[in-house]
Length: 187
Image 1: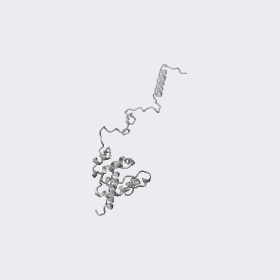
Image 2: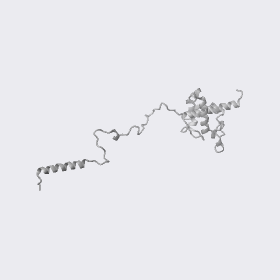
Image 3: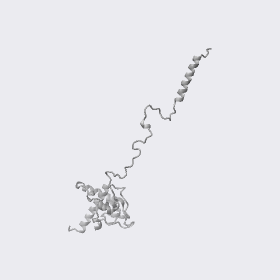
Image 4: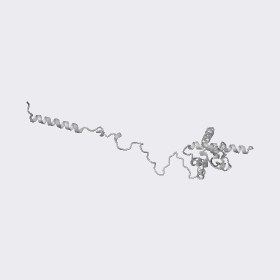
């Protein structure tokens, strides 16, 4: 039998140390990987667009539509030409405005805007939009009322875009013109 020489013992010790280093240096699968260069995907920083930044205080978007505090301020602040379509788009505004009016306004204000819609037997009568009081009102008044509502009128700003609101206003103006022609056929 061979005897263990000091040289063999030394070799066995080195092998045991290498085995021990190999076993203890292995990481579990849930540990993070050892990296020679940092990997940005594994960084603890929030990812781009993960959390939107708040706009700076006092800033206003370039496309923002600034709403007035009440319908009377809106009547003063909004220019009437803001709501007027280009001449080439008037037919489209009339057709689309009539569709939107039928969807959102007809049930209370009626087909001619006289306040005689199908809801008058359940709720108080809606105002007559063709009344001279409303004919004199500027478009900003109607825009504000459609956006924020009134006493019995629901706010529709969440459901109708500003362009669609201007189409409804255009249709209301057409209803007012039609009543004026009916009441005064000479003009």
